Figure 1 (tube, protein in one colour):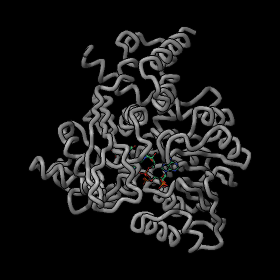
Figure 2 (cartoon, rainbow, N blue to C red):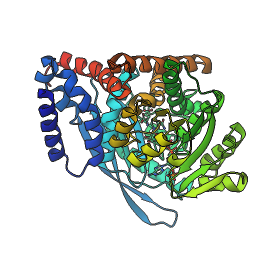
Figure 3 (tube, rainbow, N blue to C red):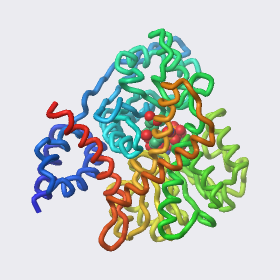
Figure 4 (cartoon, rainbow, N blue to C red):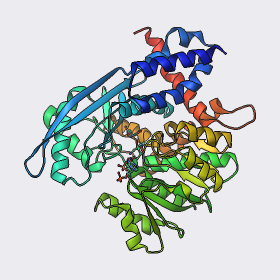
Length: 449
Ligand code: NDP
Ligand code: 2IT
C-alpha cells in the first residue's frame, strides 16, 4: 500500500525537522496515521501538500517574561504562542502555565486544537500558548505581576479577529482576569480578546463547566449507541482541576458514581462515591484554598489516598483521564481492561499513549479521543466570542442546549467517518478525518500560499 511508504517517509522527515519534540511527533502521528490512507485516492489533497502544511505551524512566537517576586527578586520565564492554522477562523486555544511547558508540548496542543476546533463546527482556527511558569505556591500578587508581564508582550500578536487565547492547565478565572485587565490597559480597547472571562466583563455562562460536561456527554452519546447509560456506573477520574471537577459533577447528575480524583501528588479512592457535597468541598479546596487532593481523606476518612500513583488500577466501568498528556500508558490500559472498564473519554489533551489507545481499540471498548471528547470547552469559548461580538448574553438554558447539540454532532461526525465494516466505531479515525476535511477544503480554496 503506497500510503504506508508515504506515512513512513513523512514521519521520518517530521522527526528530522522537529528534533527533541516527542509530544509533537506523537500528536501528529496519531492524526496522519488515519489521514494518509484517507487521502490515498484523493490527489487533490496530496498534490496541495495539505498534511505537510498542516503540520508546520503558521508561526511560533517565543519571548522573555520578566517579573518581580514578593521578595523583590527579578525572575525570568519563557512565554510562547504557537499559531498553528487559521484556515477556518482566527487562531483559538488556551494558555498553559506549568513548569513542564516547552515548545514541543505547545506545538502538539496547537496542532490538536486545529482539528478539535474544526469538529465543533464553529469558525475557529488552532493555536496554543503558555509559559514555563509555576503558579503553585505563588501569591496572588506574584501571579498578577507574571500575567501582566506575559500579556505586555503577547498583546502584539493577539486580537478578537486574529487570535483569542483562553485557559488551560494553571490558567483559570484569576489569570484570565489579570491578563484581560492588562490587555485593556495597554490597548485601550474592551474586546473579546480572551475567553473564559468573568461574568462581569464579558464571560459566558457554562464556560467553566463546558469541558468536563462535554467529556461526559461524549461518553454518554457513545453509551447510547449500545443502549446503555451512566446509571450505576463506577467512574475513575484523574485530575482535580477545572475539567475533572465538572466531569465529576455531570457523572453524578447522570446517576454514575465517581470513585477517584487525583493531582500530581497521587489519587484519592472513595468507594462510597464523591457525591455533590464532597465535590463542593473539593471545589473549595482546589480553587479557593489551592490545596492538595490528599487533604480530602482528612475530611472524609473512609476514603484512601495513594501517594505518587495514578488512579487506573481501581475497578471501574468508565475512565475519564482529565489531568495531562501521557498520564495513561499501556500498562494502565491493561489494568483498566482487566478490571472491567468498558469506556474511556479523554477530558485532558492526549492523556493516553499511542500504545494504550491501540489496546483499547483492539479490545473494542468505547474510546473517545481528546480532540472530540474535550471540544465542549472551546465550543463554549466560541459561543463566548459570538456573544461578545454581538454584545449580548445568552441564558444558561440556551447555552446548555447548544453545548449538548455540538457534542452530539461531534459524536455523529466521528461515527460517520469512523465506522468499521464490523460495525465497531473507531472514534479516533472518525475525529481525525472529520476534523481534517473542513480545514483542508478551506486551504484548497485559498490556493498554494
Ligand atoms: P487545571 O490546572 O485546572 O488542573 C489540572 C489538573 O491536572 C490538576 O489536578 C493537576 O494537578 C493535574 N496535573 C497537571 N499536570 C500534571 C502532571 N504532570 N501529572 C499529574 N497531574 C497533573 O487544568 P484543566 O483542568 O483546565 O486541564 C486539564 C487537562 O484538560 C489538560 O490536559 C488540558 O489541556 C485539558 N483541557 C482543558 C480545557 C479547559 O477548558 N480548561 C479544555 C480542553 C482540554 P496539580 O495541581 O498537582 O498540578
Ligand atoms: O484545550 C483546549 O481546548 C482548551 N484549553 C480550551 C481552549 C479555548 O480556547 O477555550
